[in-house]
Amino acid sequence: MKIKNLTKLILIAVALGAGISTLVLSVLGNIEVNSAIILLSIGLTCLAFLKLQEM
Image 1 (cartoon, rainbow, N blue to C red):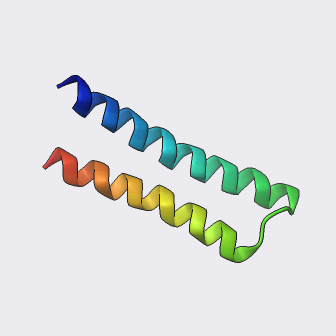
Image 2 (cartoon, rainbow, N blue to C red):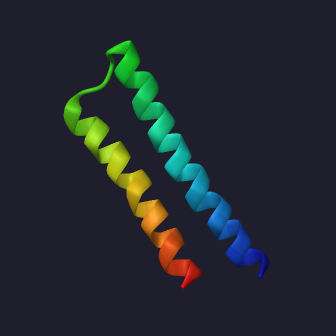
């Protein structure tokens, strides 16, 4: 059970980090559209894995 909880925490942290970093870099004007899409895709994929794990 501890590994499952750790995996859940890591997936949430990566998704949150990707979203916040995309937001901050966008506000600062230091990110290209392709890079922003990649970061947001990584976050979305982590959330999808999290939902699959809960099934």
